[in-house]
Length: 324
Image 1 (cartoon, rainbow, N blue to C red):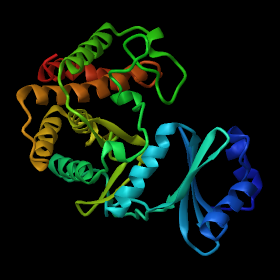
Image 2 (image 1 turned 45 degrees about the horizontal axis):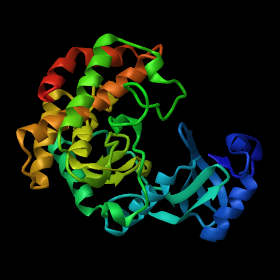
Image 3 (image 1 turned 90 degrees about the vertical axis):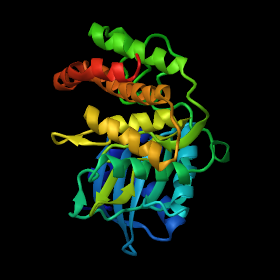
Image 4 (image 1 turned 90 degrees about the horizontal axis):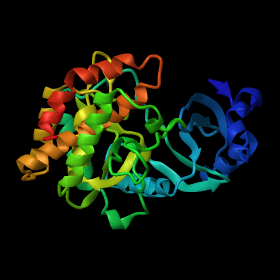
């Protein structure tokens, strides 16, 4: 922890925002919550800057600062409505505020504690909770835009080449051809999804990984990462989640083929859907796209070899199940 007024360490975090410093952020928090930050509990920076702080009145709050995008307003609206509907999650505090090229939001800090499960007890339970999420979500036309979706579910992007631009790095993946089997797999998956009538979009969560969906005693504890809200066909939302919901070998974001199959079956049952064999293939294709995109990004990293190798070992079976 660090005292909020120890400006040296805290101010460096805001260098990239240029229009937001510790003092103005503190005043902004006080104007909305009636209390100033006193202590920084932790900080995390990747695509956004996320701060957990304790206020002078001892409330604990998370402040999120990230590049502005129109879709983030729709994500916040969904978060607010889902919290009001009783879904386990942090309470959004106040309205989003744009500060220059950034958007700032606040929410309560969810006290995860040491008793969290690292993954759901079963694929069926995880699928049932995603089904619950989609059932409770607002209608697509009841919130602001959620476009464009994140690239790991944006198979039908309008950019040149096979791959959309990554969300977390500047490289154009299409400028790094190969391995040939991976580019070919992604092309086949895109074709399979484009050929299928996927149905109308619904609001859902497109990053149903272990770090974003926490559990305690086998019960859903909290849904996080509300920037990953999308309006996509339900087959795509379920298929993407089926591919990433598990923790395998200590690695979040991967699910074996049997785990993926159980998730798809359980999701369909929980939502009382009558998917055809072709619908199920499309769900497999949506999950395969997520794996292909993640592996393609991994080819750019010096430590990405194992990710690519694991997909190489199972991609033909996933493509077969996808009808691709």
